[in-house]
Amino acid sequence: MVKKTTNHWVISILSAIIALIATFSRPVEIGSSSPYLTTFLIFIFWYAIFCVIIFVTYWAITRVYPKSQNWGIISWIFALIGTSIIITFALALLVTLIPGGTGSSLNSNQTNQSSQITILQPDPTIIPTNVQPEISTQPNPTPISTVPSLNQVQSITPIQTNQATSTKADQISRAIDYLTPTVKNFANRQIQQSSSGTYNTAQICDVWQSIYNQWTYVSDPPDFNYFTSASDSINNGLKGNCVDYAILNAAVIESIGGSSRVVTACPPDTGQCHAYAEVYLDSSPSELQKAANYICSRYNCKTINYHMYLDPQGNTEYWLNLDWQANYPGGSFFQDNGTIQIYYPNGYHYTSKTT
Image 1 (tube, rainbow, N blue to C red):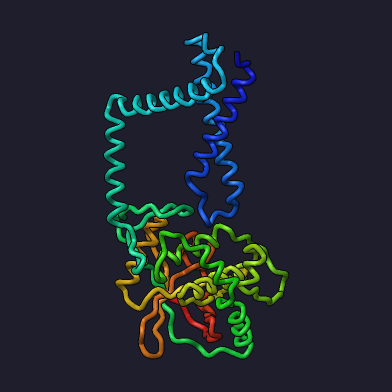
Image 2 (cartoon, helix red, strand yellow; image 1 turned 60 degrees about the vertical axis):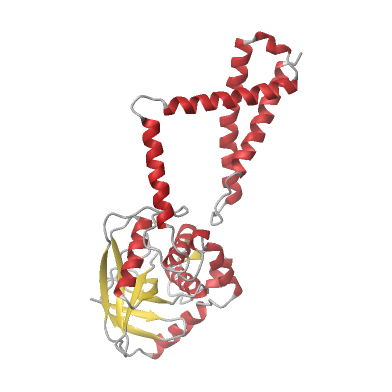
């Protein structure tokens, strides 16, 4: 005869084995900041669920068939697993038979969603336009019902800058060290598999989202004019102020094949000045709209904010806001006093008026 405590050990071990299988059947996202803790919590969740299911099964067997107390361990293992499967299947079947057609309606909706996913799966070689993931998860493509609006803040002809600003431009340029292995390897790790391929809008959102989720804001001392390099910010665990955040975003964008710049601005009053990064999208209004469609389907937004710049040759450039205060790529701009300083990774810089 198997003792009651032995049966409890069998229940615990079976629950642990099944929980392990359930936990590792779906791996944790690569971008997760604490994958081991997440995996452990998932295991505990499944372990508790299966403990309850198997214990209820054990209790039901002993009440319905009292002679089961004389079974051996092997018999109990097969009985508990088999009965648990039957009970689970019966409950699932019962749900589908609830009056009102809940199950059939659900299956119909799931079928429609699957067809949409197949049709709208982004081509890795182009900028996708109709993908709607949750902000912190893998993309879950669904079509958007409205076209997002474009909020333009136009930049006018550059103004000559002074030597002090040139020194600052050199410091920011050196800090955007996108050619270092540290920055490149970090950038590659932030790109989701669904965004693979040549440089595209999905990859811009991937790197922005990952840095946004992991960043810890830490202020500098007063009058401390130091620009932390992107590689140092990575080695420091993604910590720093708004300038450090902007520099890291700019460097990561450059390292995956994009073009970026850092913008500094001060508020209309005597408040604290701010810095943010921008990414070059395209020179075509139609491509700008495609990028806006993708971003607003992914983040459920209605407006994309950008700067438009006309270079000396008359070519139009559209630059997307990547501010950490914006809540999504292309979110609202920092309220400046009408003048902004723009710094490029190659050391070029100028002062611009915004309207």
